[in-house]
Image 1 (cartoon, rainbow, N blue to C red):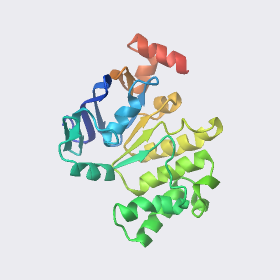
Image 2: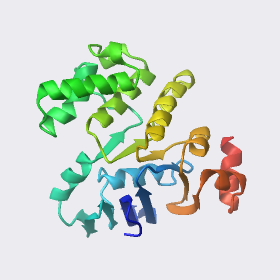
Image 3: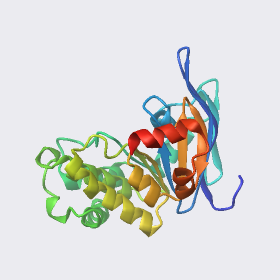
Length: 252
């Protein structure tokens, strides 16, 4: 561990699908209150890397540590599978496609994890869920079903659901890419407010404004490797590699 306030650390993560090596030894450290934006073209490995952090994808090799508790991979499998459940309880995840339970109300979606995973009493879970829904601007939607909400509202429910687990780190996988353009801002504003609260966040995103203005650190992945990494203003103003310079010129 390189710093005493390190929350989540990935070391030499490699991921192979058949003959294709998607991740070629990616290492990343998230400290308390960091907001790390991961950028890269389609196929660069950024979403695969994020999913390796909570073992939705099992790395082919490498290790992930949360507060110094290491989950080691051997021969493409976790050395101790029981660690995975404990890891996931402390890592929130917000998906591109929301992944809400369509047959449950907004309130029930947010209560699900605390009640069934953390075994919280229903009354306590309900109180927290209502508070988190208010936090994301959806206090009036507790009894609605996902089909009755806009995409932006569904994604805000998904953020409330992640918050309800009171995670140490929240992982966001392209949280605005499935949204209509007019709905993107409402989700980014919630994410920006979470960053202002000091939440530790790792965000795979194509939103360059968010990456530059909100992130404490930016990572650029290209062909399964970190090509550039550092403070966003420095990276965007003075790209060190031609490939990142081309990338930001293309997405502006």
